[in-house]
Length: 259
Image (cartoon, rainbow, N blue to C red; front, side, top):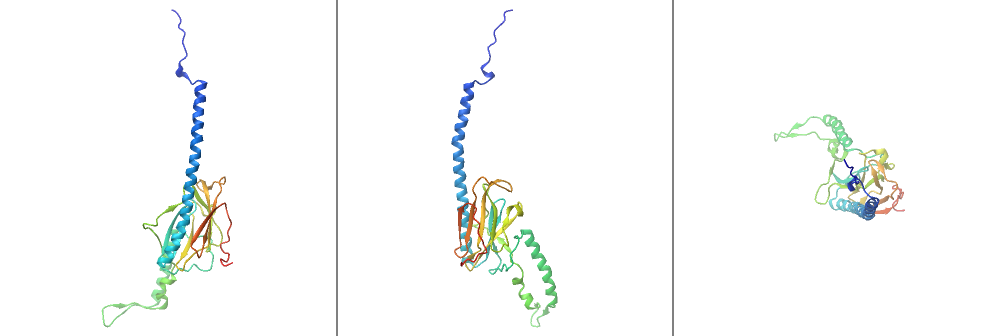
């Protein structure tokens, strides 16, 4: 039997030239794609930041036009935010600065607790009496009962219409920290946790709280990308506008605005 010479199959591997060509093509694709990706991300970030500044002005105008108090609620980790309106025009935040803003669940619990305690005052006011000229009952009246709506904390409802709905700075951006005038100190993402939120209030007299928001690139859940320059948004209380600048600028929100 004669031996046949077995020639190596071309399909058994790639030649050096073929490998070089593939690597060159991959390098070309990355060289073209990465700058385009950066352009897209930069445009998206600019749109998000300008949108937030515009929303501050929109909320300010809405408060002045409707005569209602509003608040903008921010979830720091996700960058989500929305607008809520109070069920009455006058909202007094008090002179005491808060350590953190309440969660939605805490606000509901506080309302329920208030109603339970107020029922005691209603009982002390006495029983309803029958009107001798009609079948109607006349409820007991006292200054405390009449002041119930002003004594309880306001009820907040999310604004959802053609102009307003859920907004977000994500997924590229997140809020590393923020502080408004009613806060005693910075509201830090690391302290508030993944669902932590903070607020800015808008008053019908034509004022938005002085506030500073530090906006960073998001590396991962609860993780800021420190390799990229952050942004700072500040509000102008009596003008109802917001300014965004690159970098992390420290602002004293309790500084007298007239100085």
